[in-house]
Image (cartoon, rainbow, N blue to C red; front, side, top):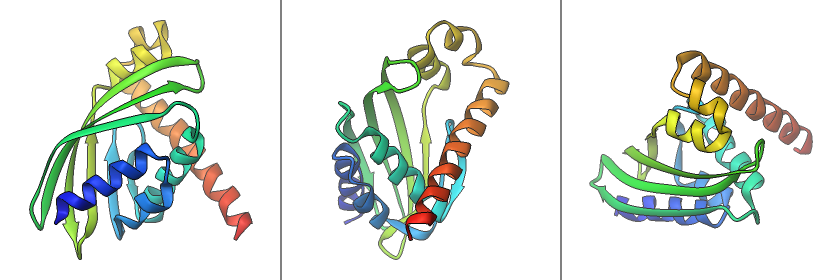
Amino acid sequence: MMTLIIEKFYTALNNSDGPTMVSCYHDDVVFKDPAFGILKGERAKAMWLMLCKSQNGKGFKVEFSEIKANDTIGSAHWEAFYTFSQTGRKVHNKIDASFKFKDGLIIEQTDEFDLHKWAKQAMGIKGIFFGGMQFFKNKLQGKTNALLDQFLKEKSHLN
């Protein structure tokens, strides 16, 4: 049963369908990854809406496999293929995700990937030199969260 929600989630991501992804999340969801850090509730949902909006129609592709789940926990491997908008460089990111479920929805998601490898692909020489350092991770999380803040601000004007 919970394998189906993971499949629905990644199929929606591959289709840049943020609303369907968000429907897989519990209202009290906690998301964590190296690029955004820890996001809770509406911020976690908004992150996927923002990413889907920015990737829609731009050659973004997701492949997922190794889905395992019971009623309370799950895991999956997924790979994202896209062009990093700030540099125009191609990225192939390999991610391992772990999940916790509550009320038939995702309550917790942790995505783990090699940030240094990602930085080398996305940023080239800068990523090679700095991508493995803590200050780089902190700066990246600051930047991604600032983009998310801006997205939420713009979204609130539309409501």
